[in-house]
Length: 277
Image (tube, rainbow, N blue to C red; front, side):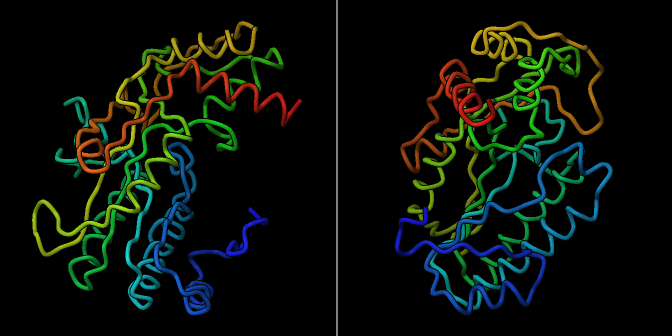
């Protein structure tokens, strides 16, 4: 990235209002793509204040920066976690998401409400993207696929929650990136509830849930080694299935994720080997 003339890197805490004000004042932003957050369902059970600082205070600072800078479009990361324990599948952006089952999910739902409010009050175009189980190179080391890969290679047991019966709509990082880029060019003109509010929310998922045991089997093949499995009950805050309805994404920007778990995990394992071994 350093080879790009217009690239700059700032290491700041988005919960620090003064730092964010300075960042926006010193740069003439046209678009803002906001992906910074405290992520993870399980971590939120023990560290709630980290989520309040980053996901709530930090997000207000981003919104305020966008308001005073009159940016053309704010695209921000939401999460499939907002669907909670919804039983209707696939998950649609038209579904009720008023019953989150983790603090992380609640903060992401709050982000969508806050963004809509700023779109209503200040006519800031905002688009929230509900990502579904993102995986791939340079991902979070605390994610299951990362931990599984490390443990399998080391010959250590992996923890398989809900006895491997969970299903996830695993979405490869390249598809997420393409979705973000395409959506950033699609500035919302109005919402479904109010044509005068330039706010939109999309799902970005593979539209093909995969059982956790199947995911592990594919990972074993990519690594060339069997996993030692420790089967455990489902943890608080987890959901049995995620499944993205991406009809709106296809209709509005002509894109749907297309990377299979076989292709995606193969790329990830090759990257992992080159980076860690």
